[in-house]
Image 1 (cartoon, rainbow, N blue to C red):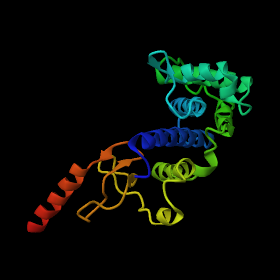
Image 2: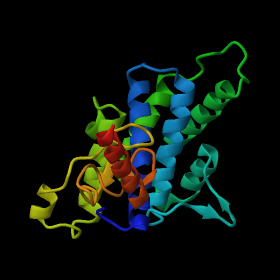
Image 3: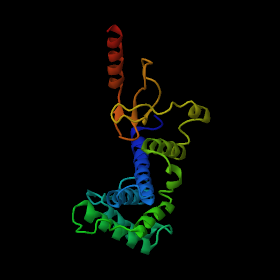
Image 4: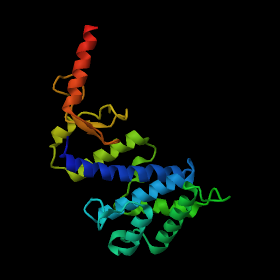
Length: 230
């Protein structure tokens, strides 16, 4: 692993926020998906990334409650000028608020006959959020699928956040991501091969967050031995 578990969790959180925002925003830009669910997901993750950017990367907590909904996060951004920076103006935030409200109407079955209530102006504002330094991700993942985007953003974040973790020589020797037992994607980040030399060692999946433990490597080793005897 390139970091402690806590460091990895923080890094993965930022990767996933940027990735979910970007892939949904790009799909909306290209009119590849219905606008409601994708807009809600993109807005929520973009706003969470923007708020966390000014909070040292940590989850934002209001009293004893975690702030998670797009509406609550938007209220934080609108109420704190230092969070939104010059990358977002008040008119854009108003349009974003309107888009979130309209998306929720469809997602929760409250829309009457206005099935496509989100228009280009809402999508354009969503795209414009990418100017905020917390995001700046659309150009990186455009044309990539989910697995490719997650791996690319992880590598970028690891380089920026932990340049001290490896020397250039050590970085060049890192293994490619391995297959995750839980979600089936090639997104398992490990320190290397397991102690038995038959497969990936202990690590954590960037995409689903599941951890591969030493017990998992022992299980796979025993399974391989039993298979040889058969």
